[in-house]
Length: 125
Image (cartoon, rainbow, N blue to C red):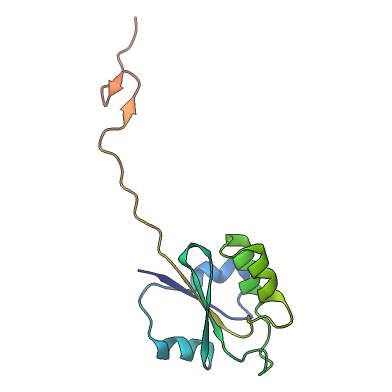
């Protein structure tokens, strides 16, 4: 199940992880969070950035926190990041960042230790 981060222009970079919503979201919910019609920007690693479709035209504030977070997490290429930051960029106002939840890792049943598989080491005299 994906995670959704709601990032406003006033969110601090350190607070982004605290904005997570761990449940599926509807179109109406996305539009409510963003404050209007939404546009989808596909990023790396299966991430999606939902932005205000006409945020720049409506002169919404630039979302520098989102730009910094994307740069920090490497969720988009340098070229895409430059495009998003350009004059015609799309990151204005509140955005919703959708990322894949981390895959659960399985712990192996037999972890090798010195002296063989799961055998206690013998003390040498």
